[in-house]
Length: 252
Image 1 (tube, rainbow, N blue to C red):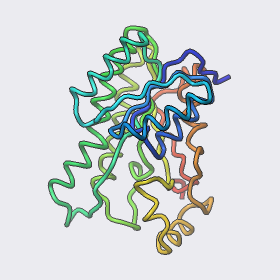
Image 2 (image 1 turned 120 degrees about the vertical axis):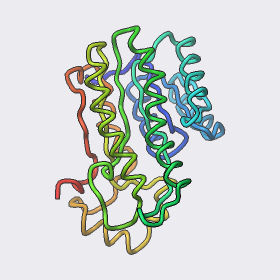
Image 3 (image 1 turned 90 degrees about the horizontal axis):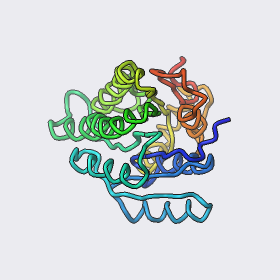
Image 4 (image 1 turned 120 degrees about the horizontal axis):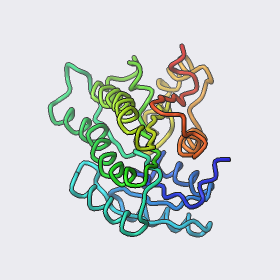
């Protein structure tokens, strides 16, 4: 069960953080990996690590906010492998501010990076999946796409991730007839390059301990089981699902 041998898995935002962690998880299940991000040197380092374990890896530079570049990368992947079985939309970033203080540029940057990019990448790779009547699309949203928060002001991030949640449902309904599923994972607090400085503050640790029933941040690799399940052949009847992996934050 959950064997991904022979499956071509594309992971965006794989140069670090959750994307790199999930890439390692898919490699452990035998997948052939295409990893994309803007920082090629980090992609190459990850590719070397995965190849040392016997995984076939294709690292490709891609700015997910550039639709032409996204389309070019998709074409390159199709030319090399002839198909794409699994897409994980993990690339993202954000400018944090509240509704009264956020600038137009901060808003536009966050929406473009965290929501519009998911449309660009999904469109490009879903068109390949349609040709084969098979696909697994996994969008990495956030628990902040399901709820608000009182720890920090980040209105554009909440908005973009909420958009990804309902984009997931729309795509699931639209593409089901092509044998393509689309689901979302909503991570809770995980330490990455983008979050570690905030998460390590005493104030945020106290907030986490008061709001996360499990009482800790997520550990490296704790998203992998959810991603592998949603990517599997066995999950063929699972689509449009929004899966929080958040230590219980959204259940209280």
